[in-house]
View 1 (cartoon, rainbow, N blue to C red):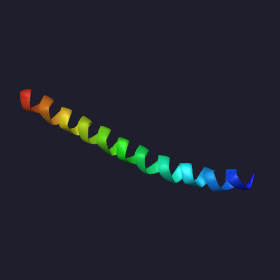
View 2 (spheres, rainbow, N blue to C red; view 1 turned 180 degrees about the vertical axis):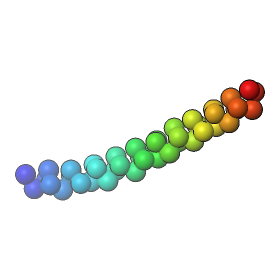
View 3 (cartoon, one colour; view 1 turned 90 degrees about the vertical axis):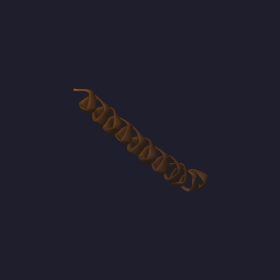
View 4 (cartoon, rainbow, N blue to C red; view 1 turned 120 degrees about the vertical axis):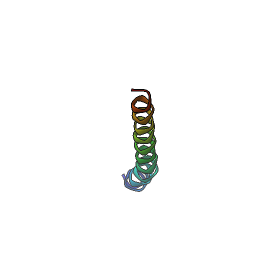
Length: 41
């Protein structure tokens, strides 16, 4: 039980930044795609 209490926040703290970075990257890619599309329109 104690190890779960210790490892659960640890995995969350490891996973959360990576997921936020992924969302930022995907948002940036989406933004770049839209800029490219509007450039050609």
